[in-house]
Image (cartoon, rainbow, N blue to C red; front, side, top):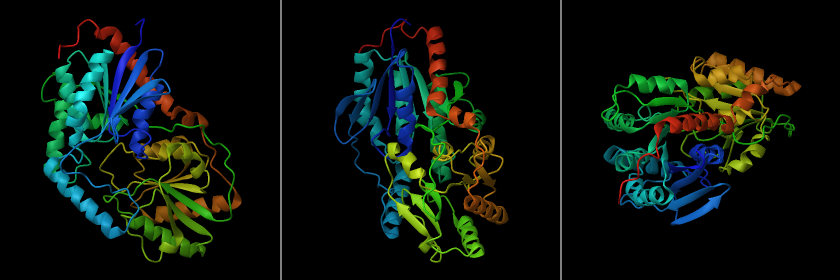
Amino acid sequence: MASRIPVLIISKYFPPTLHVAAQRPAAFARYLDPTRFQVHVLTVGPERASEVIEHFTVHRVPVRQWVPAMDTFQKEARYKHVLRAAWNYLLRQVTTDLYYGIHDSLLGEAERIIREQNVRVLITTYGPPAVLRLGLSLKKRFPVLLWVSDLRDSLVQAADTRLLQARLRRIQRKMLGHADGVTVVSAPMIDGLREGGAPDSGHLSLPELLEVRNGYDFEPIREPERRGTRFTLAFAGTLYQTTNPQRFYDALLAFIGRQGLMPHEFCLWVIGGNSGMPVPERLRPYVETSSRVPYRELPLALAGASAFLVLVDDYANRGTYTGKVFDYLAVNRPILALVDPTDVCAALVNEANAGYVADYHDPEAIGQALDRLYQDWKIGTLPERDWSVVESSHRRHQVDRLSSRLIDRIRTAAIFSAALPSP
């Protein structure tokens, strides 16, 4: 491997979009060993353009589709959010994919990059499903490609109907039948893929499965300054429609009453807004929202909180770390993790000694954790974080695992032994 290996990463989400999904492919592009790999990124954008960022090249292509999906991440009146979500629900049932136009819109540009750059490694990052279908099309067109299918989320478990689940399962089986490797964010997701059955075609067995966790991508803030006299519990991200926060709301109201707190003494701060989720009338004076911020500004925003909230109420989807827990880890404030105590998120918080875990389905445990968190804040006590665990959660270290494995596979796969097929 005297020269660098050309790699094409395909993702719907990529900076400067504020969606949390943009950070994973951005980390791949940034931290794949630049002495070994020449990285190109293909993503969506308002117009066709290419630019060099750091040591990689980003190509943007506009997406055309007859029936568009609605943006549900805007801060707006609840009835508007409900209408947008209903439209997307119906569109997903009909098309399986809210962004079905990505496949046809990006296919030609992907083929051009592969030919012009002599690409031999393809990395696709799900979602949406159209990106998987694009990977399938490119693998069939260029069999010599080493295709790594990256699953940022479970493909099947998030489906909201049995019909949609069956459709997505078929796509997953096709992907497993043609991909050379699959990267996932947690070990339980690997187990889920193994239990999902044999691939439809291509391989006789499952491709290689590799855990590449998410992480944070900034310098850890070990000693954030305490700001103000109000206890601020921050939640960064989105409470989706499938999330039921009512148990947390009930426990929070009981905590406020038990401690005799006024709005100037306690605040639930939602970074990113949440117009789609109703907040009880009694709780509204204690809730503040702010717009999503660029990732580079997130550490400073998080440093302004007293503590962080993680909330996962669906215990069926094993292996869910949830979006911001790694960013929380890197800012020395306690985490209140209302999650399955037996799942990966709880294990990570406990391993790093980064806060308190309570079973989301146990109101008494939530109340006790809130009381302890508040009392610790009043006396200025912080859990003694294990910074070695925190440092291992940096995205650079996670992508190093993928980089090393790719180098090993390339050495044995002889991917340059065959020419790319003619147009």
